[in-house]
Image (cartoon, rainbow, N blue to C red; front, side, top):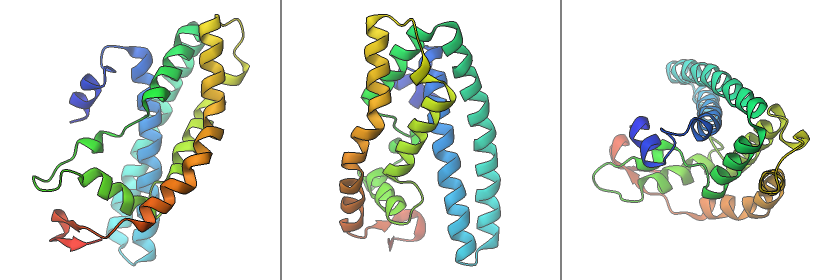
Length: 191
């Protein structure tokens, strides 16, 4: 499914986009699985906590590899990589899960996302923190010698966390107010 998602998003044929997207996506899945592991442990499900913790550790290793690749591309072509980073952030990072479907609920990913936000599994704040993390480890703010397009891209990416903070509370409030919906994979239990 992820290969199809990457192709549809146009990332499969562009190594710049692919390394940026996968760095972001792998960190997001690391965070969400680690948070799920914590919740599982708090609720006494040690097996689920172990499974999610193992997946989180895998995702962390993937993130490390992809972010190192992206960092190297930034060193080799800072202007091109900066422009692609901004382009990706303009279309928003979407997780492959947004393609999930159970044959019944056409808004399944939105409903799933609301539950994840309400429970602190993955929030808008996490999204912002990932962006800030990547900007820092890739030294985006310190890039020099960029073209005017590259400088505009740099300004956009570096200013984006603050812009996203203005909608963070609204996203959280909308998720908290969203009605509970049944999920097919938990026997139509409403969450």
